[in-house]
Image 1 (spheres, one colour):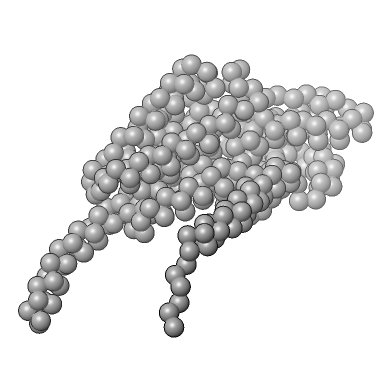
Image 2 (image 1 turned 135 degrees about the horizontal axis):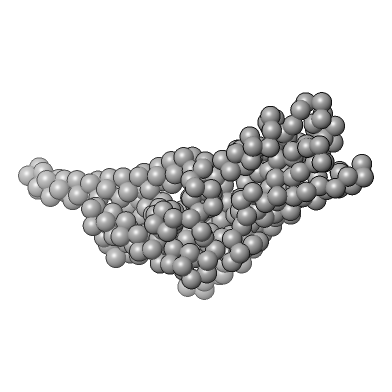
Length: 337
């Protein structure tokens, strides 16, 4: 008794069911990845400096400690040392106790959200004792982007550019050295165009033009190489895997809209391991802080780019080896027959 083959209607029903189930799952994942970190934004061990004589800063430290888990206190001898720490990106801000009263050093270029949060927290504490706080923005955000909105909005386009570059190289059948050179060339062009728009036109970046272009290009290359590299090893499915990783995790976990230390753990840490987060941190460093604290994100982006390009070359080698072995296998089978 033979079994009847599956009818076209049954196949269509299965596809419909798959779509009905898959779309809500993807929507739930997107809401979780984007909405959850945003809804839980708050300072978590945020590096904050306190400067001045120990006896004078004790009360301020006690008040800051009331915000349990919010601040990681760094001690400095005087205002000059605290200012250097802010400029070196060791801390996001510093409270300096002076004879004239407390002074708050901030860096809105590092994160306008954090600068505003520190201003509110320190001002409220000082108001409780009847004193006023003088606020000094040590490294101010550019006039063209005082709230950091444009810089935060750059994360998604750069990730998309990398995904498109990697997917295009794969779909066009480029392999080996040609694929690697195409990825590098496309990333370089993206870096130049992005720097021209963000620095020269919009004025939201204020550092060295070519360094910014290199940062934007490296961020794009890290994503594009990862896409093409995984696709070269496992096939077109690799495009979807890396695209999902960058869009659903890299983008919302980057901390571009606030700061990595403002996201719930381990989201903030994971975000800095991925190209979108590392690229945003590096762009802030080279554009506003003369490259301070740039080593970590540079290494992260370089590793992603190097491993991705290495996978592109390895995938080409494996395919070439498979092709050269196939004719030999066919001849052996013919001889045995």
